Image 1 (cartoon, rainbow, N blue to C red):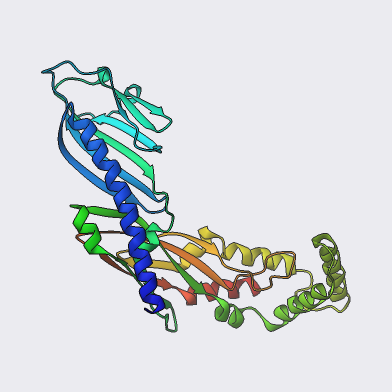
Image 2 (image 1 turned 90 degrees about the horizontal axis):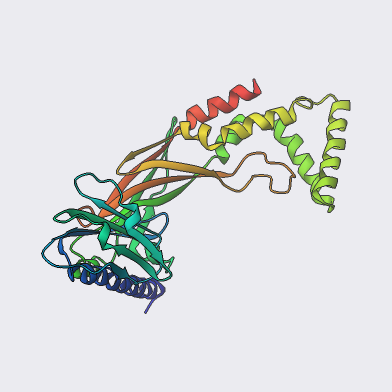
Length: 322
């Protein structure tokens, strides 16, 4: 058996074991509720970013017999529970109490002949579950004069296992990361003399093995040397770097990214710094752009397109050095 086959088997085992645990918990909730009430509907949802099992049950209270004071749901530590009547959707907060191994409902707080919605959130213990359940692929970038394009595909795996146990399941806000390279664009728009000055600083600092404070002092001496030689940019190097940093802030870089089709933009993060040995940031080699999508049995695969507006990005860089 090859490595990919082994990984497939391992992923299937992770999915099967986690689903078994999720089903055990949801069926226990159903059984406990059905002892006193009639269940009208239920839904399972997986909140991907926090790796949470979200289980919802609609049940109806009846006044035909005497109810116990409380119903206990000791099926594992719960993250959050809410109970609301369907008509008003106003939480009945004083009806819920958290216990060491779950929660309990004070049935005396419920109205007779009323439909209620119970929502319970549990952490999914195996953090590998989402990766084992979803296949994520990024196509090679397509480069044009104005943009770079990245095709994204997220697809549910092990559908046979899922459909065997669930009538319906949905994965909400599935994270999808794409590393958008910015090296070539920076190389084209950051003047060579400016890069030479930085690279000289890198060489100086790499030969000096002191702490960051000592490195900073060395850099200040290097700056004085540049001033004495009347090098271009010597008096503006830190001001320029501050402006460059602003371009790579999430709020600004967001303007150079467009996410289309089944995905939507969520956030972006700086990748590794180009000059990692300097005691201050310069510019990253790439930016990680995080998009999100939903997939379920009706739509087990999602297609997306990430467009990096490289021309606008380069124009912004160019203005800094003008």
